[in-house]
Length: 322
Image 1 (cartoon, rainbow, N blue to C red):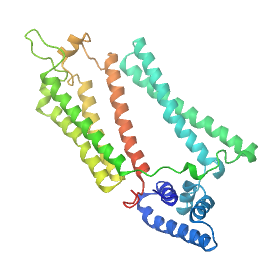
Image 2 (cartoon, helix red, strand yellow; image 1 turned 60 degrees about the horizontal axis):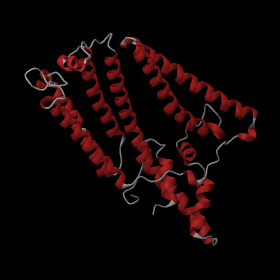
Image 3 (cartoon, rainbow, N blue to C red; image 1 turned 90 degrees about the horizontal axis):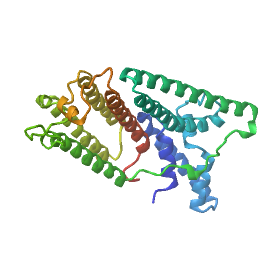
Image 4 (cartoon, helix red, strand yellow; image 1 turned 180 degrees about the horizontal axis):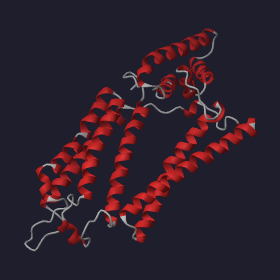
C-alpha cells in the first residue's frame, strides 16, 4: 500500500523543475517525518498523526511553489489554483470541440483547404483568448467582491493523485508496441493487398510506390522508434523530460516530410483515389487534403503534449514506492 506521505510528496514534486526534485524531496520527507514523530511522542495514533501533519501542510502544489520561491501571481493565492485547474479543463474540452465543429462545417460547405486552415487557426485563437479573459475576470471579481468566497474548493487529502504503478507503465509498452507493429504492418499490407485492384488484378496501393525507395521505410523506422522510448520509460520507472523532447523531435521528423509530400502530391497514389472516386488531390482546393492535414497535425500535437503530461504524471516516483 502506498502511504499518504508518498502521494503527498509525489503531488508536490511533480510541479517542480526536475533538477530540484531530489533535494527538496529529502527535505520535505524529513520535515514530515519529524512532525509525525512529534505527534507520536505526544500519544497520537500513527495514521491520525500522518493525516494531521499533511493536512496542516496544505495543498502540495502551493507548498512546492514556496520551496522554489515561485509566487502565485496573476490572481491571489486563495483562488489561483482553482482558476488554473478550471482553465485547463476549459481549454482541453471547449477549444478542440469548437475548432472541430468549425472545420466540419467548412468541409460540408466545400471551403478550400487554405480557407479551412486559416479559419480554424483564427477561431482557435479567438476562443482561447475569450476563455482565458472571461475565466480570469470572474475569479478576479469573486476575489475582490466576495472575500468570504476565497478558496472555492478547499483542499483535502482525498484530492491527492494516485501513485503511478509499474503495471501502468508496462501497459504503455505493450500498447505502443502493438500500435507500432500494426501501423508498419498496414504500411506493408497496402502495397501488396490493397482494397482496390487495377484492370489486370494487381493491387492499387494507397501510397505512391516510388516512396519505397526512401520515404516509406523512413516513416516505418520513426514509427518503430516509439517502442524504445516506451521501454526506456518502463525500465527507468518514469517518463523523463529528455524522453518527452525526443518524442517531440520524432513527431517533427515525421510530420514535416509527410505534409510536404502531401502538398506536393507525391504522398498518395493517384490511381487509388481515382478508384475511390476522389481524383485529383489538390493542396489548395481539395477538402480531403484539409482533413488529412488537420488529422495529422492534431495527432502530432497531442502526442507531443501527452509526452510532457506523462512527465508530470509519473513525477519523482521512487523504485521502492512503485
